[in-house]
Image 1 (cartoon, rainbow, N blue to C red):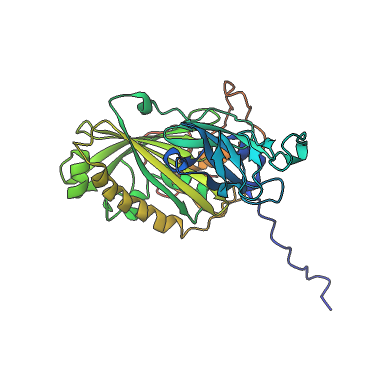
Image 2 (tube, helix red, strand yellow; image 1 turned 60 degrees about the vertical axis):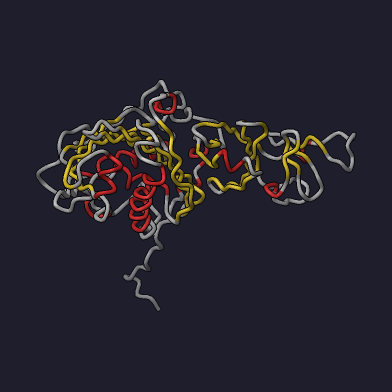
Length: 378
């Protein structure tokens, strides 16, 4: 019999699955390269929703649920006919909005609503089909380099990782990981902190980061950047676009400007589709694409090794993690995502969310002094 003074242990609180929250459905995600859709329909999972993506016309992607309403076969096995997607089982045809528009067995009969399936907003941009499962809160992020004839676009990576989109975004905003995670490519272990770091609150849906890092370039990196091999500096301007897209613009003293777009498309809480493409103000004759990708593959492999070793679960509300000053951008991201999930961010993007920031999260100059700040709160 249990002593009356001994209380049984309480079960741990249920972990909130951020990725099950409907608010995340109201953003745009790049789900499939357009060139892959030219070969036929492509299946994709987004936030647990099973989708099929296809080209209804050249450059016009469409997205609907990947299950026929009749016997729930995967429509991604079907064929595109006159812009519609035909089920491989019984030939039912579905329009871009998910409506069933033809049943060959009873072609003249009225089609009831039970035959229709959900369709989703889908647009082509930057060589990808972007999908929004709900009501878009904002536009697809704008990258001006895409319209600048002085820049070329380089499609880099489209692959599945076993990690969390939240963890990848924090990694991209973390200016202290480069010396250690990227020690075999460009990181300098003798410079464990950025030379400069400014974090800026850019309203409800964005965070800005300006950083200057001390880096080390090997021969290949020197060729790719026009810099001399050895120790040099790199200036980075980063924009986080809620929820899971990062825009990194790197400027080199050689005059090269290199913008990296990295989207972590959430398949589930612990799986993502990595979508990465670049813009550079040079040409194929300056640095061949394959030569550039040779280095980028090494850099991305270093990130992947660490990110797939991190617990994918991140509690936005009650995290026991201690923090560094260089975590301030990631902590601001957590705060904005909490505000989103709590319904505190207006849909009208012209309205700013008034965020109260502490000194570890507001805009600030170079990092220095105390290395660990236990009072920096998520």
